[in-house]
Image 1 (spheres, rainbow over the protein chains, first blue to last red):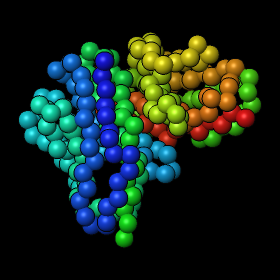
Image 2: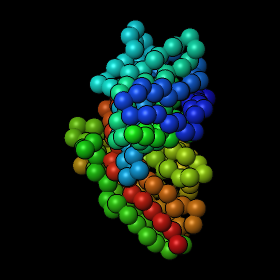
Image 3: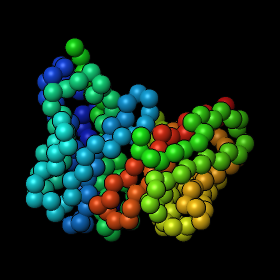
Image 4: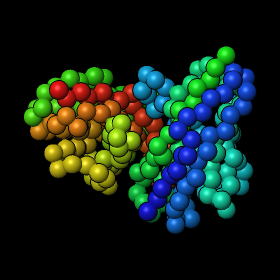
Length: 115
Length: 113
C-alpha cells in the first residue's frame, strides 16, 4: 500500500522568508510520481510541482522547489520568498504505475505567512 | 484556471435526497477522477473513468455511482444522502500514466441537512 505522511499540521513563516514543508512517502513501486497541491481558503486544489521517481534533478517551478531524497523517501516542498498569498493548505500526493492513477494524499500542512 | 469545470459550486439538500454533480475535463484528457474531501476523512479517491469506462474504484459507497459520457464529461450521482456525505467533491482530469498531473476542478460543496 502507498502512504503519504505530512507531520506538520501547521507552519508559520514571515513574509519574504523561505519555508520547507515536509513530506515522506511509502511505496514498493519503483515507478511513481510525487505531486504537491495548494488549497487556499477558497477551496480549489492548485497543482504546484511534480517529481518523478526517475528524475535525476530536483524539480523547480518558480518559487517552488522540491528537495527530493529518494533513499529517505522524502519529497519536501521549499517555498522561497514567501508571500501573504502563500497562506493555504498544502498537500503532498503520490501515484504509481501499479496503483492505477489515483492520487494518495497526505493530511496536509496549513501554512500561514505573516507580515 | 485548471480547465476542469464542475457544476454546481454549492448544493444544499436534505437527508434521503439524490443529487448529481457534473464535471467537464480539460480538453484532450480522457481520464476523469472523483475525490471527496471531508474534515474527518481528508481527501479520498472515489472512482476513475477512462474514455467512458470505469478504470478504478476507491472508497466509494454503494449509494454513489458515476459515469462518463461519450463527450467525456462525467457525472457523480449521490443518493439516499446522509449528513455524513456533506463534503467537498472534486473532479480531476489528466492524461494517462503515473507521471501525468491531475488538474482539479473548483469542486462542489455539498451540504446535507
